[in-house]
Amino acid sequence: MIRTVNILDVDFSKLTLKETMNLIRDKIDNCNNKFLHIMTVNPEIVVQIQEDNELMEISKKADLLTPDGVGIVWASKILKNPVPERVTGYDLLIESLKQGNLYNWSFYFLGSDEEVNRNMEIHVSNFYPNIKVSGRHHGYFNHEDEEEIVQEIEYLCPDILIVAFGSPHTDKWIEKHRKRISAKVVFGVGGSMDVITGKVAETPEIWKRLNFEWLYRRIIMPERKDRQKKLKTFAIKVIKQALGFN
Image (tube, rainbow, N blue to C red; front, side):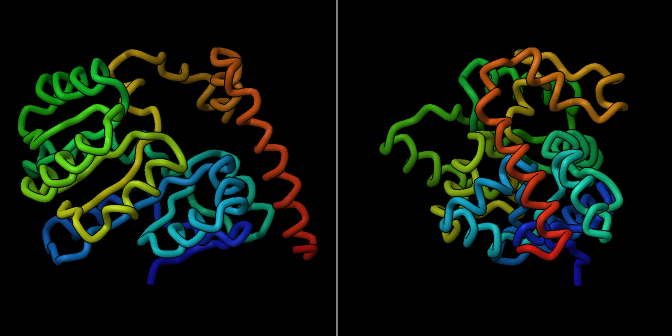
């Protein structure tokens, strides 16, 4: 049984990044017909889940919800059931690539624009030569293309399917095609491929150490202002939960 902490009706895993990777490796080594669906959830997505019944149901069906963001760590401490560390989509992707290179895993990269998606394949080829990129496709496709993509994934059976549509589209797409996805592990990575390929600058280390990545993103991406209003909503709701008002 995986240890969890409930934050606003979302059950977050208390596994460390290392423990999460052990779970992924075990799934790939001992495959069955059901893929491991990991949702990487930050405070903004928690609010989305509360406002979207479909996304709430998907979150309850997912195998693992990881604490993607310092806000989740803060909330778990406020609720006196702390998670040991953040486990972000970016960290999961980087560690999966490292271990994939050790164990010859296969990947399918789905999402972002064509340039980023293509550059991701090049990056993997250059830095993780033992990984097999089974296939890839950008995230801007029509209904006919979507069917071809699903058929391709179904045929290729990658060890890991990486989806980068952003929330909530990523996990809704995974749920839509749940019965046909033949990958062993599936998780969303938000804009991580944009960072890895250099389209978006990585957060400087000093901002990470201060747990101010959210503020750095707010400064360099002012269009995130409305999205980050959800952080205030999240904080208020967590305090109410801690005080027993939920």
